[in-house]
Amino acid sequence: MNRRAISLISGGLDSALSTKLILDQGIEVIGLHFTSPFSSRRERQEGLQAVRTANELGIRLILKQKGLEYIDVVRNPKHGYGKNMNPCIDCRIFMLKKTGEIMAEEGASFVITGEVLGQRPMSQRRQTIELIERESGLGSLIVRPLSAKHLEPSKPEMEGIVDRSRLSDIAGRGRGIQYELVAHYNLKEFGCPGGGCLLTDAAFSGRLRDFFAHEDNFTMLDVELLNTGRHFRLRPDTKMVIGRNKQENERLRSLWTVPQTLVYPLGFQGPLGILKGHIDSEVIARAANIIAFYGKNISPLVTIESNNGSVSRHEIKRSDEDPERYKV
Ligand code: SF4
Image 1 (cartoon, rainbow, N blue to C red):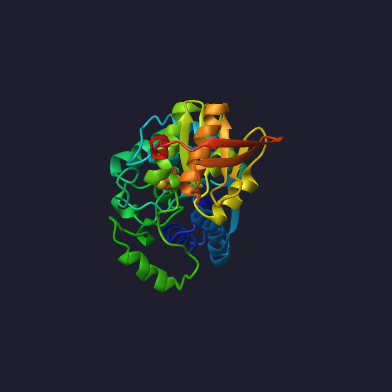
Image 2 (image 1 turned 120 degrees about the vertical axis):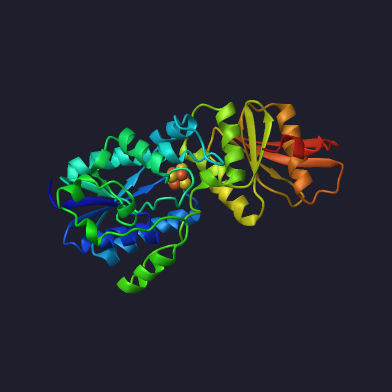
């Protein structure tokens, strides 16, 4: 084994500290940060945080997209979901498999993660950690510096590449010891722990479930739409997304491309929407009713325009139908 490692850098404090504990032993470390289609906007900023963390640690950072391949993992996770649509075990396996490929490309001999035994209910239990080691193919090549003394020695520890006596024995959800280490090392560049994955969000997960139940092809536009506005399933094959405020209306307008249909109110203030899927007069009537419901339409007649490359005007008699029945 050589003295070069890949460290998974999330931008949070655990991965920064783990890396620091290994760097302190004079081992060369290359950082690796995965970006996900399901990262929240905050998490995307944390991506930049990972760059800052790597700079502070003085290491090179590789940025790698999980990409659309990851969608299949989320759609059919072998080990199931957590509380929401978060397939944490399969997600860890996926990332570690990719890390193994990068390890080979970079000529590194082991991997560092910031995992802490017992910190997360799904993926950081002892049994699960062992399962992830097996299924990722990395086995004992994973070093977890923060919890090392609670775990079986990894291969780099057994071979004396990593000095086990200088690793830590943190377990559980508290972060007191981590903050002591942060102060000891005077680290400043790390983000807030957790909360950046949309798959752990109940509302987002509901929309994603609906998407998987009705649609096959998943694009990055779909991810952006799932993360914006109010969502309605008007027919099994038709979805409508409307903005909740001016900012979201503008965002939807910028996301809109043909063949999706843009719909918006005429003569009154109301949300802008994107229709995706089959469009007919019934769908347009439902869309108009929804725009009127969330807008400031007081007339029994609702006028909207639709644009799918050519603009059409529709004047619809407002119905009593409750739009909430279509809400996803
Ligand atoms: S919280 Fe999200 S990113 Fe983190 S392991 Fe679970 S699915 Fe993956």
